[in-house]
Length: 294
Image (cartoon, rainbow, N blue to C red):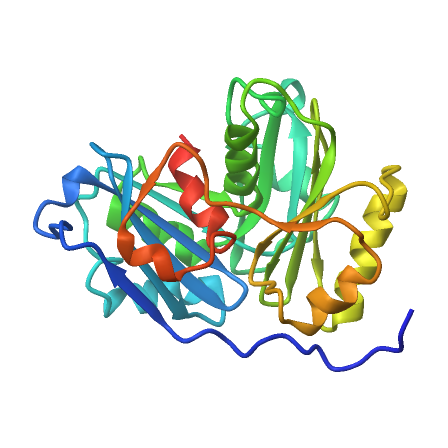
């Protein structure tokens, strides 16, 4: 494999602010707010419930998820109460998946302690993965910023949910494939310096998040996961989501090792404002898929 080099990814994308002409911010109860704080960004989407249509997309710089309350304080939408539903997903590798029959509410910190020692400003949060799916017997347990969790409850009420970003990613993929599971394959998602790899077939076989800093890191972890799960880089397809672009150094290097690379589509079952036509189909998949997370 080539020697390590500086991670030649594209510069941080400029802030995106796209709003459909029909969006009515004076009637927030008709909309669902979805927020993704991961990879040094805060992306938010607004879904019009009646038409199941994404009518707002914004992408802002956010160094850490814990900075979301401060960002919301000066933001037109994030800090406003009254939404029909609010879902916030956070990134990071501090998470684990537990079989639902083994999960006992109140023991979240104990389960997570096997993989991650909670910091003084963190708390353990649990979320049951989408029902009626190959993953409906799993509970996601993850570390979240305590101030962020408190702000979410105080601002948006007890019905607002905090999730790990792998949960909407999986929910969207399950919805995408429908009731008949395709051949097992690997999905690759890149957000900033976080690489998420997920293998799904008749059931969820693999889900992990890696910190990457070079194109070689992306290739290494991808090939490692494929080898561990018996997938063949020359034969089995890899679907790409997130910030990895066709003209990036990471994609070019990955293409020399994986023969069948393809970019994913937006989540099926939703409609999208024409304002989003300028955004690549493979971007914001997990953000839009928060619509499938109860």
